[in-house]
Image (cartoon, rainbow, N blue to C red; front, side):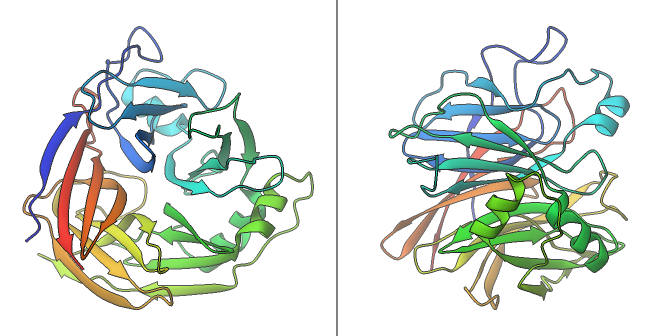
Length: 305
């Protein structure tokens, strides 16, 4: 078992509206840039910004225009469902890199992308660019009965997207593209479909009849990928269910499962970051409690490679 420690609740100084709580409640993607922690939540139009070793409330950076309903069911229908966040290295008009936030693609309104420029110190620079995932979504809907993109990493010139399965369709996969081809297509007015260079399907096992399914991933220097997974008792990609297990694992650059170990508690972890420290991986995780009244939390763990 991997022991996890709660570091802090993801409290924020100001909510997106007066009726929203002063915390993020559905954290779903995590990227660390220096001392800054960036978090996307699947029921927000904003990016959460927090700082390591600081208990101060975070702040929100708007990604998309508009206002989401406050009531749970309506909000769920209309949310952009941002589930994946990754750091893009310097390219073209982004000399210090950017953050790329992607929707799950599980519904027609969940195919938006935000491209957020960073300054030399890793802080957000200027307003984000809203993009459309259509060029990559059409081929993926052909490949998966229930598309649900939950993670993204960039390794060299490749973008890897992580498809999350569920109890009804235990169909986890790592989907590969040329990152520069995808970025060019997303920023272009053309909508010609881009097909992945590879789809590597992966099984993570079961607990009490419920499959472990991918919820996020991050890349290591050697190209291996550290992922988090949960066993959520739900039959599809839309409905939530009780989380009965959670785990952290490592997949090799070529998609081979190298190992996976359960967390000591069934936190519904949906975002992960990893820092290499000798033979240890120092892990940060964020949670989605599936309840707007409960704050998502930042967790830490340490594992030996």
